[in-house]
Image (cartoon, rainbow, N blue to C red; front, side, top):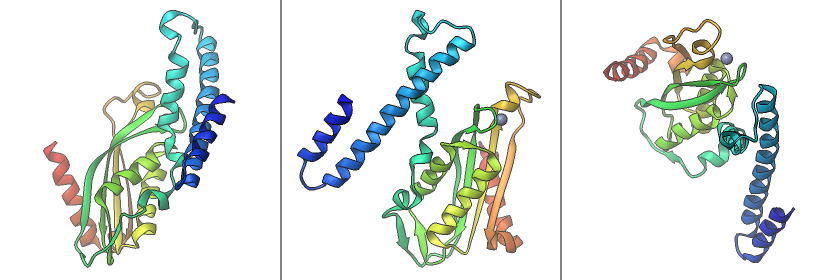
Length: 222
Ligand SMILES: [Zn+2]
């Protein structure tokens, strides 16, 4: 393919970070290929539901939908060590760190419709802390996949445990599932709350209560 060749040429012309460029070119290739395949499939979906994908309003819809789904699922391509690279710091801080109400958008793996809500993360450091924005990045990595809320909650907590081996971690997710509001039981205002507690957050009721009351306090102000 033309685009593939041009990317490879570009990669070889640049000296220095040649390998890095090659990786970027390969990823871009893969992205283009996936979007092309998805575009074709979305066109078929439109036809299957009785639409005319050639009509003016829908001409670019398969491609737009393909790019959107690619974005909604980009978390599969992210690796935890790459994500946290350079953002783990040695620090003697041993008080609770909380980042609350991190916005989260995901897709339910049973119906492929949105799950959206907020994630609150707390941890007790054990000589290492994580750059604060990285907590949001971890949420992004696991939410931009097909998910069930229970699994996502656990994955986020385990990723932080793996990264900095803290004394404890707590993750609470409060989310709306569009598969419950748009179809099925059609419960528009219901929210699903899941939590995962590891280490002292699980074993010590006082630590857990401190975390829960701090994130609750903040939420009631919204
Ligand atoms: Zn669902």
